[in-house]
Image (tube, rainbow, N blue to C red; front, side, top):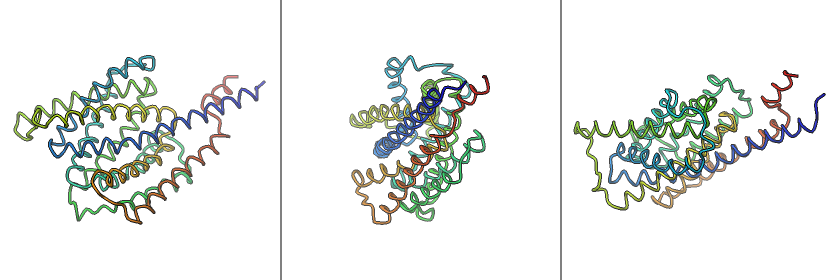
Length: 321
């Protein structure tokens, strides 16, 4: 005989886990533009590939104390082909976006990048077979409209560099799918540790080849002490952000988390104003309001659906009885 109290407790725990995942995603999305701002500042004295290399190296170093502190959460093989794939996607995503930051305003690059949540939602349905209801799809579409209102990117104005955020968006979405799949046999933290190690090694090798071939001139020690402080801070920020994203995707569906990535545009807009002097116009604020409304609606809708939807564990337990 089923115990109603046990079933209610299971529903509550599932609800709580989803809410924690969404909270992690919100914090991570608000932190990401800070790291992007630091990367754009570094491109004034370093090549984007060098910025990406030091970002991953610094992040890998910061993962050492994090790994010691959170070692009980490390589970499964850290170094494997699927983790290497995640590392490769991370490299493509970061280098493309940092290169875009060098040649265009950060908010514009982020605005173009925001085709990514829609790509992620579609991939989640096609690859992960996650159920994406029509209401969430509409909310995602509305959020995308709001994102495009914040900054109106123009290929005619920026030329081919406008494609770089698009490349970054696709590789980021693919990495989120890989992360979700890889986390089935290993903890999310293990995946991030391994992917960062692969990315750091790959970037060092790529940078060495480019430097020896004369294709890229690296600043190295000539960058100045302040640049190295920014690199260390950026690595720490990246480590924290990636852990938050990994844990968010472990707790909630990719399709659910996708709309919350629009919150990154809030941080990008703030960074543009505070650091680069870009003051948002009224259309931008309308776009921000639409983005927030989309995220809040999805959060509310998921709480309603999750309150009555059985969890996978509950279904398996019912079948076993």
